[in-house]
Amino acid sequence: MQDSAALNDMRLRVREALSRVPVTDIHTHVYAPAFGDMLLWGIDELLNHHYLIAETLRWADVTPAEFWEMDRRQQADLVWKTLFLDHSPVSAAAEGLLEVLRALGLDTASRDLESYRAFFAAQTPEGIVDRVFECAGLESLVMTNDPFDDTERAVWESGPQIDSRFHAALRLDSLILAWETNYPRLRDWGYDVEGPLGGRTIPEVRRFLHHWIDRMEPLYLMLSLSPSWRFPDGSQLNRLLEECMLAVAAERGLPVALMPGCRRQVNPDLRLAGDSVGVSDLASLERLLARYPKLRFLVTVLSRENQYELNVVARKFPNLMTFGCWWFLNIPYLIDEMTRMRVELLGFSHIPHHSDVRVVEQVIPKWTHARLFTEVVLAERYAAVEETGWKVSDAEIERDCRDLMGRNFWRFIGRL
Ligand SMILES: [Zn+2]
Image (cartoon, rainbow, N blue to C red; front, side, top):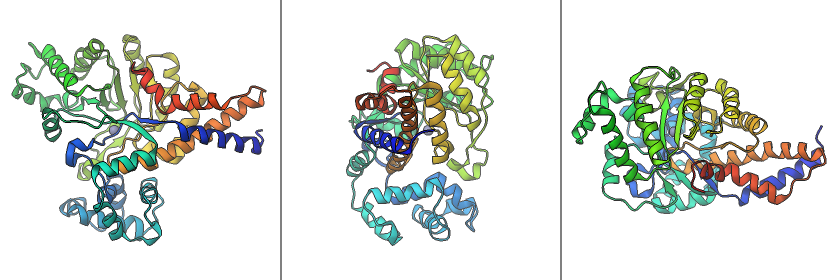
C-alpha cells in the first residue's frame, strides 16, 4: 500500500518534470498557416467539430440533411444551444472546448458566445498558432497530408514556406483504400497505371510515391485499415501496401504508420462524424511485423478491446512502436487505463499520446489530459519503485518524461 504523502510528493515531482518537457504531437489533422483556410481555428470551427455534431444530432430537432443545409454559424449556434445551454457540457469533447476558452483567457461563466466570437475575430492564424503552441507546451506537430486533396495539392505545388514546427506525413488512404476511385486520377497526372495493377502499374505507383516524398519530405507514410484487414492474402490492398508503400518506405528509410480499426461511414448522413469502430485482427499485424523486421511501424488501434493485445504484440516486435489514444479512446477514463497498461507492460518504450485534432486550439485540452494522466500513472509507478528502496532522481524522471512526450518518436523514426 502506497503512503499518500509520498505519492503526493511524487506527483509534484513528475508534474514539475512534465512542465519542462517539450511535446511532439505525432499525428494531427491541422495544417500550417501556409495552407490558408485548411488551417481550422476559432470558436465556430471548435463548435462544428464532428464529435460535437454527432452529440448534437442525438438531441436536436433537425435531421442530418437539415443540419448540413445550415451555414457554419447556424450550425455552431445549434451545437452551442444543444450541448452547452439545453444540457450541461460534461462530455469530453464539450468540456474540452471550455478548457480551450479558459486557457485563452475567456470567461466561461459568461456563456456569451458572441464575446467568444469577437475574441477570435481579433486574432490572426499565425497569432493563434503561437498562442496555442505556448498553452499546450507543444514544440512541433505532424500534419496529415493527402496529395489527392485538390486544395492541398495546389498548396504543395506552389512551393509553400511552411512553419518549421509543422511536419508532414504522407497519408495513403486515397491511394490504397480508394484505388478503384482514384487510379484514373494517376493516369490524368501522367502515370501509366491500370486498375487491376497490371503492366507498369506497380513501378508507376512507386514513382508517384517518390515524387510526393521529395515534395513533402514526410516523417512517415501512413494508412488506416478496416477491422476486416487480413494479412497476408492476395488482395489488391495488400499488394499496394507491400509492393508500393512498404517497398518505397524501405528504399527511403521511412517508417510506416498503420491505424487499424476504423469502419468508415457506417452512417454516411453524418459525413465526417459517420465513422465507427471495430475490433482488429492483430495476428495479421504480427505476420506483417515478422515479414518486415527491418521496417519500423508506428501503430495505433481504435478499439479498446485490442489495447492489451497490442501491448503484448509490442513486447514481441521491437520494430513496432505503439502510439496514442485514438479518436473515441481519447477520453479521460480510457487515457488513464491505456497509459497505465502501457507503462506496466512496456515501461517507457511507447508513445502514449497524440491529439488527432482538426481544429488547432483542441491541442490544449488534449495535452492537458495527456500530462495529467502521465503524471498520475508515473507517480504511482515511481512510488512503487521507491518502496523497494530504489531512488529515482529528478533528472531521471525528466529523462523518462522526455522520452514519452517526444524523444521516443524522434529516435524511432531515426531523426535523433
Ligand atoms: Zn487521424
